Length: 79
Figure 1 (cartoon, one colour):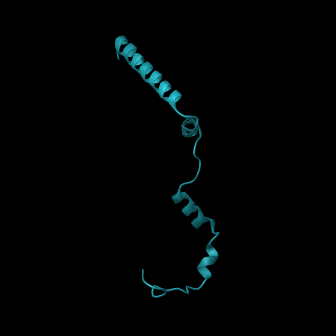
Figure 2: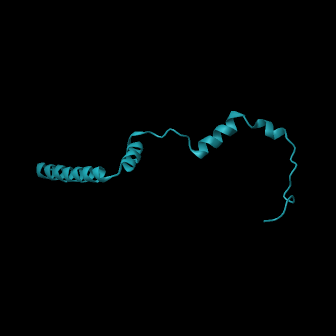
């Protein structure tokens, strides 16, 4: 990239930054709070898949395997 392209790129980025600043300043306090949370707080919550795997591997529900199957497909009324 040539020096003129670098300067042009930097000036375009500066325009983008200034535009973003204006947009952020126009947000309500609630919208700014949501933006801040999305940008700066890392989500460490496990996914549904990870929770299912944890439940399967953890053994917390193993007692259910010993319970009799008292319901069949014929139980209840069809929907």
